[in-house]
Image 1: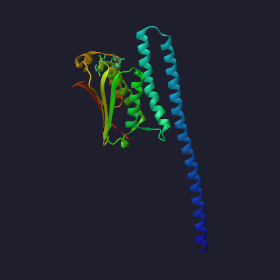
Image 2: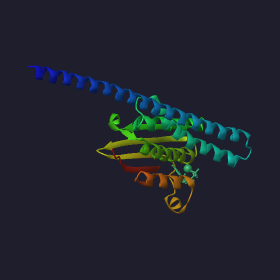
Image 3: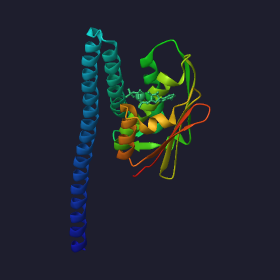
Image 4: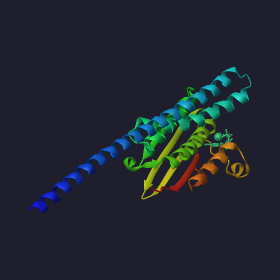
Length: 231
Ligand SMILES: Nc1ncnc2c1ncn2[C@@H]1O[C@H](COP(=O)(O)OP(=O)(O)OP(=O)(O)O)[C@@H](O)[C@H]1O
Ligand SMILES: [Mg+2]
C-alpha cells in the first residue's frame, strides 16, 4: 500500500510539473503572437512612411510623366501595406482570407484613382470562408491583382464607364483568380512582344507562386490566373 501511495505522489508531482511547463509554453506562444502582430504593424507603418515620402516628391514634381510614375510606385507599395494591415487587425498573422483581401485591395486601388468615373467593380467568391492564403502567396497575388485592376481602370474604358468582374475560388488546393472587364479589349499581339513593366511584374510574380496565367479578349479583357495552394 505504501508503495502505491508513493507512486501516486510521484505521479501527482509529475503532473504538476507538466502543468507548469504547459503554462510557460502557453505564455511564450502568446508573446510570440504579440510580437508577430507588432511586426506586421511596424512593417505597415514603415511602408506608409515610404509612401508619404513618395507622395511628397509627387507634390513637388512638375513633370507629369514623373508624377504618374511616382503615383504608380505608391499604389504598388500600398497594396503590400494593406496585406500587413489586414494581418495585424485580425487574430491571424500568417494567413489571410483571400476574399476579404482581394475585395479590400481592389477598392483601395479604385479609390486611389479617385476620379468621378463610372467604373463599377463586382465581386464573386466561392466558399470564401475556406480561402485562407499563406502570406508568401497573398503578397504576390495582391500585387498581380493590383497590376491587372490598375490596367483595367486605366485602359479598358476610354469613356470612363464600365464594369470590372473579379472572381476568386479555390477547390481542393487549386485556386483561380479571374478579372474581366467589359471594355475595349487588350491588344494580345502587342502584349506578346512588349516589355512594359506591368506585364513583366505579372510574369515574375506568377513565377514566384508557380501560377499559370492568360489574357483573352471576349467583350473586353479576361485575365485568368491558376495556382496551387500549398499548406
Ligand atoms: N484591361 C485592358 N484593356 C485594354 N488595354 C489594356 C488592358 N490592360 C492592359 N492594356 C494594354 O496593355 C498595355 C500593357 O500594360 P502594362 O501594364 O504592361 O503597361 P502599362 O500599364 O502601360 O505600364 P505600367 O503597368 O508599367 O505602368 C497597356 O499599355 C495597355 O495598352
Ligand atoms: Mg499597367
